[in-house]
Length: 143
Image 1 (cartoon, rainbow, N blue to C red):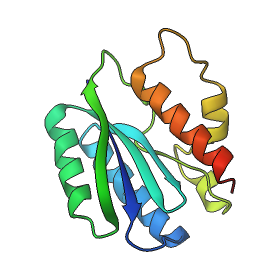
Image 2: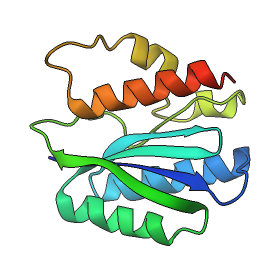
Image 3: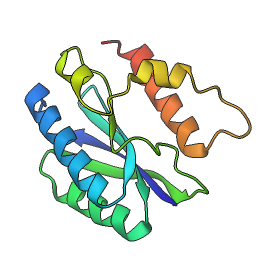
């Protein structure tokens, strides 16, 4: 199983409608291409994990690089793992204040997710990295 983690800055502020559109489109395309993952949007920055077959992940990543909503895109981590970390998520997403997100299928509350994931010697590198990123941004820039 191949995974790719990237970070990008938004080219403009994104609003709830923008984020809902991204989430809906991502879930449709990811399900079709058997890609799972998580997308965090904090302080006009995205960090995303994509998991799946190498060619499928790279195809999605190439589309993201062409998306005008992203700028300063950098791959932070990539490689192969034995298992999916986000096997039940067509695309998890950071909870925003709007109740619409709670009603979306597959929604996960990331505060609960990360607090329920203890760091051990067996923690996959991608999870450790995401947990550190998430906790630093939440603590440094609370919502």
